[in-house]
Length: 138
Image 1 (cartoon, rainbow, N blue to C red):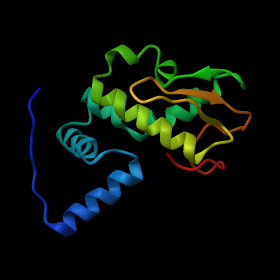
Image 2 (image 1 turned 120 degrees about the vertical axis):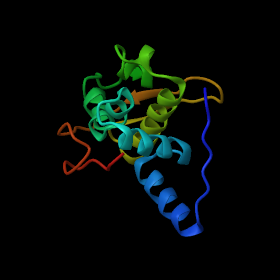
Image 3 (image 1 turned 90 degrees about the horizontal axis):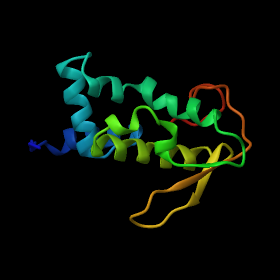
C-alpha cells in the first residue's frame, strides 16, 4: 500500500482536525475520505464513506433484538469481508462513538485490548435516523 504525506499550516490543520472529530474519524481517515470524494463520487470508497452508510449503523442496530450482543461485523455481514482494514477500523470507531452518544440504544458490553468489542442492544427506541429523532449524531 502506498502512502501520502501532507503538510498544513496551523490554521488549516485545526480546521481539518475539527471536521475529522465531528465525523468521528482519525485525521488520516478523514484525509482519505476527502481525497476519495474529490476524485469521484462513484468510487467504492465514496459509497463506503457516505453519510448514508454511517447512518445505516443506527438502522442496523434497530434490527438487533433488545438484550442481544453484537459486534460491528455483525452489523455489516454482507459487506464486512469487502472492507479493508482501514474501513473496518473506521466503522468500529463510529460504533464506539455511537454507543457513547446513545447509551440507551446500545452500550459496550465487553472490551479488551486487541480483541473485538462486544456491544449490548439496550431497550431505547429510535426513529431510524441519527438526526432529528432524539439520537445524537455519530
